[in-house]
Every structure is written in C-alpha cells, then in structure tokens.
Length: 217
Image 1 (cartoon, rainbow, N blue to C red):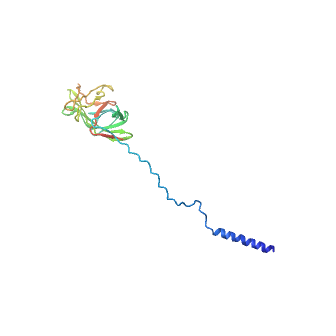
Image 2 (tube, one colour):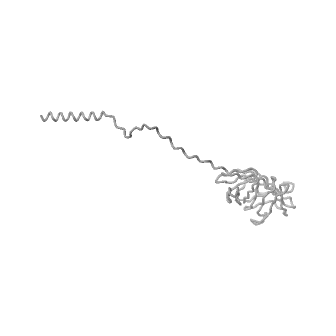
Image 3 (spheres, rainbow, N blue to C red):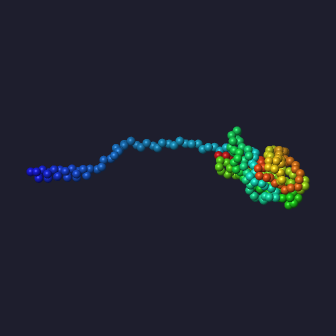
C-alpha cells in the first residue's frame, strides 16, 4: 500500500514538472496598446550674428620687432600686437593686446632708389577670438631722400591716415617720429632731417586703415 502511494506521489510530482516546463515564460512588462509618444523636439538656437568692423576703421598696432629700409626685405613678415581696442557701436570687438602680423611690401635702403630709402608696410592678419583672421589694410609708407627731408605717409586714400609713433635709428623707444593727418590727396607727412636709413624699432605704434570690412564672430 505504501509503495503504491509513493509511486502515485512521484507520478504526480513528475507531471507537475512537465507541465511547468511546457508553459511559455511570462512577459515582465505588459504590452501597451497605446501608440509610442513622439520624441521631444529640441529647442532651436539661433546662430550668433557676426559683428562687422566697417571699412575705414583705424587699427593701431605695436611692432614686436624692428623693421627698416635696410634691415628688412620685401615679403618679410613682422609680428605686432593691437595697441588700442577696436569698438563697434560702443562694444569692444577686438581687445588690445591680441596678436597681429603684417608684411613688408617694399624696403629699399639709401642709394638704391634714386638716392633715397623706402619702407612700405601692410597689416595682414589679426587674432580674433583665438583665430587668425586675414585683413586688408592700406599701406604705411616711409621714405627718405638722401640728405634732404624724411617723410611719412599712409597710402590708400581717405581723409584719416593714422599715426606713426616710435623712434628713429639711434633714438629711444617711444620717441615720436611723426604724426599723420588726413589731407585732400589722402596722404600727409611730417618732415625729418638726417641721412640715415629708415628704421622703426620694436614697440613702435603704427596705425593702418581697414580697406575691407572684417566679420568678428
């Protein structure tokens, strides 16, 4: 009797095991009959409009090295830093102290150009917000005709032609060597005496006129 009961119990136990294994696994999450919600739209941000520095703006830089009619060559680059902040509508867009660079357009020592010396410079780039931006400016020209007078002019036309500050060859840094004011012909100059090649020492301040607008982002 006991053996039958044990056999019956074992049979029922095995039956439950088989039935349990044959059932499909239950889903953890109930199925939803509702349609999926659309993704949230991201907020649109308007691009920042660039500030335009207009043509005709005067940019003053301070030389990082000496340049001259005898010590420089055409095509040679020179380093500089912006000496005065550039503002547009009362807001500073180019702060003072940022780096800039330029090119020696022409350099002729005394005796190679009808007895006179010539130095012509142009500003070519300014670092704006960490990026070097090309600029197009008028040329700054210094000339000396032998034993006669020295002149300093800025070519390119316009009434405002900027200023040139620095020291003559043999002079101290910061000594004034010329101040330029606008004229009807677009050039003006100050006379100097002597018979030396033109030298603009490091720390000389030069002012260039922007000929093309510059976008600042």
